[in-house]
Length: 306
Ligand code: CP
Image (cartoon, rainbow, N blue to C red; front, side, top):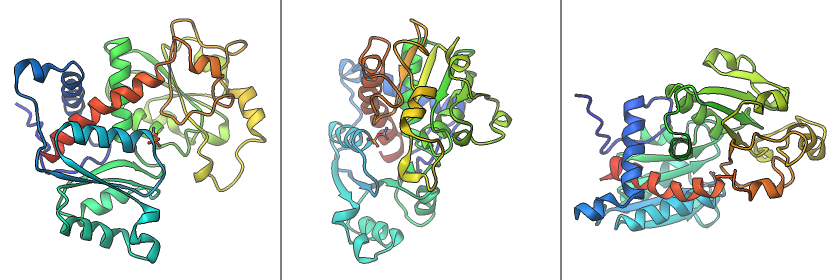
C-alpha cells in the first residue's frame, strides 16, 4: 500500500505530487466540505499548533483562506506582511524564518515573489513550509482548489477539455494547473498572445493556440488568468484595450459555449480578461473556487502540519 502520509514535510508544488497523493488531498478536502467528520464525531484538529502566515506579496483569497482553515482546525495563526516585518530593515528571508521558528512556529505558509523561495526555506528550516505562491513558479494550493472545483463540476477529469487563457508566461497558477491537469488526463489547451505563451509548451503534452475562438470552441472549462503586470519588465501587447479585444472572454462575439464553466483564480479585472456580466453569470464558478479554497487548505494543513 502506498504511504500517503506527509506529516512534517513541506508542501512545495504539484509537479512532485503523484496522482494518488493529489487525489488523497482532494478526497480529504471533500470530507471537510461535506462535514463528514462531524457526523463521525471525529473532527481532525490542529489544536495547540502555531501556524505563521508569512505573506511577502499581496493576497486576499489565499491568505484569508489559510487563516480561516487554520482557525477552524483549532490552531493559532499569526499573519505577517512584509511592510510590518524587519525584512524592511534588511533582514534576510532565511533569518526571518529562523526567528519565526525560534518563536515557536509549527509551520510557515510562505508567499514570496521569488521562484524557488519555498523550496529554499524548506532546506533550511525544520518546520513544514507551505508554498502559497512563489513568483511565477508554482501556486499549488490554488491548483488543488481548481482541480477540486473542476472535479466537482465535471466529474472525472480524464479527457476533459480545459483551456487556460491569458498570461501563461508569468503565471504560477498556470504552471501548477498544467502539472495537475495533465496528471489527471485532461486535454489542456493554452491560449493567449504569442508573447505570453512560453515556447515549446507542447513538450509538456498540452496544445497551444493563439486564436481565442479556436481555443474555446470545444472547451468544457476555461480557466482565465490575469495579466501579471507586476512580473512583466516589458510590454507584451500594445494595450489592455487591444488585449481585451483579442483575448477577453465576452458575452457576445468570442463567447464560451453555454455549458462551459469559467474559472479564474482572482483577482479578476472586469472588462479586461472577462466581461463583467460573464464573471457574474451562472457559468462562472469563480466564487465556488474561493469557497472550496478553505476545505482544500484545511486538508493541506492537516496532512502536512499535524
Ligand atoms: N488566487 C490568488 O492567489 O489570489 P490572492 O493573490 O488574492 O491570494
